[in-house]
Picture 1 (cartoon, rainbow, N blue to C red):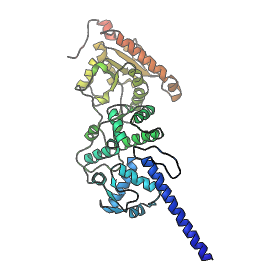
Picture 2 (picture 1 turned 180 degrees about the vertical axis):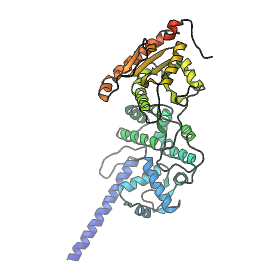
Picture 3 (picture 1 turned 90 degrees about the vertical axis):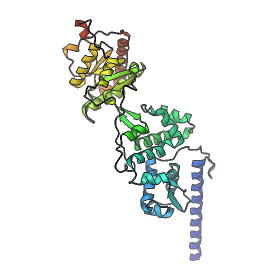
Picture 4 (picture 1 turned 60 degrees about the vertical axis):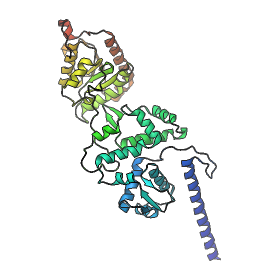
Length: 403
């Protein structure tokens, strides 16, 4: 009797396990094909992988290392990485890796094989530039909805989350997947180096600029690592001075107080204010090395429609560039952080004082500071071809120009 009961329990357990597996497979089909699951719930079609490229690439790299680039048994690789091969998470991982073009085969396959591009991107011997190109291609460009949104954003600041979700909605992503598609897109852009913080803002860069910042020789960047990028330069060939607002500010080295200050003011106050005037803000590190007066910097001082000068930190280079703009008698707006002195020579020109001593004084007034800057900029632009400056007061006929 005991033996019969044990057999019955085993049979029932096997039946339940088989039923659970069938149900999980049905749910997976629902998730990826939009069919009706065994539970009777309809799901919309997910048009992008249900996970990040970084996770899929890590799995592909495990396959590459385990099989030296050759096909591996599905059960063996999951045993190697200590995961249950038939769990929903494992099936998901295989499906995602397939969707990213890293592997061939599915969660039912006896063997899993890397694609040609998957093998190259996992191989440390692959040239660093080629590896970076492939990661950008597989993670973003070849996922249809990601690629479409990426092409619209290249060269621009990453828009607000709500705007990104609207972009995915126009690409046909179902309402229930808008949050997920936005998250996965941003994570993938970051992981492959296509989203970088430049001039205080997250900006989407082109693959060409990504590759320009990578040394041609040397080993490939490790999976999930960031490529070192060169700041995207704005040269005379692509500059549009009539729509440019040049931001003169103490930039400082990375992570310095001056850099954090400049990034905060640029992203949170100046760009939102100036965007209402239809101008694009350019900071010195986008045209050449900070702190060095070059021809390109001079061109912006003489030709930009508007210049905003940040007198914070009493930086010598800033005052030098302000003097040049004053001599040119062109529209300029002066700002300074609370507590920094304004030299007598220029204090007769209105200067907007921004109190950023702490978050409690800054945040409540951010909108007010934006409005002040926009208003003063508008007045400066409307003042005419020649703006009154301390130089023009004493030498009204004097005006420097760049020819």
